Length: 272
Image 1 (cartoon, rainbow, N blue to C red):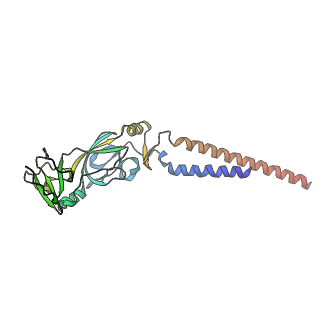
Image 2: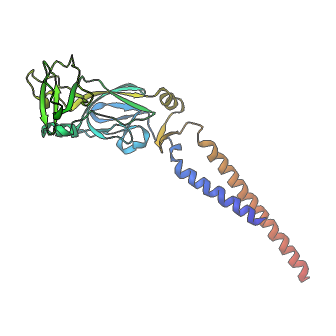
């Protein structure tokens, strides 16, 4: 009987400790809002870099060069502005350092459409006007379309139009690249002056995750899901594990004490 109690006690104690470690989010240490330097007070889906588990987009609120990570597994960008109206929508302005370096060094072969991490919780949309580029192999021997310019890029030609309104029909072998367009470039600007690494983004959080966050309160993100201090998820097991573990511990002590007392009584009778 003692071995059974010891086994159950060991298992529940192990689970309780494991749950406490994994369930550190039960502590209400994720504020609804936090001060982020020149951006003022912002909140979910943003999180201070020091408490990055509290949101989906960690922000380093340094006064000189603030940096934001777009998604938990996304790249980091210099952030110039954050405007947030609620937990489901925000607008930000960022600078892509990698793209800026490509433009500065005129690395045409590395130019590609900007992509952002896919997530069931979070999506991004560029609101800065895009410049459409057509990248075609030179062996196609295309005639330069009217109102278009081209830039030679190794084995390719990149075609673009300053008006960016009408696009002739390019062969399917050509790849389409869309990058943010500078709003201040002159009409005769070359390809690299026509593009910009600074652009505006809309940040959208799914309704389910927004309502979940608002309903249960302070949440942390871990292992691809949200855990919330005010929610029911995970807290019930902790409470029952504590009750059962303490109950079994007390029962085992009483049982062990009773057994020891009984054995001492038998030993005393034998000596008499």
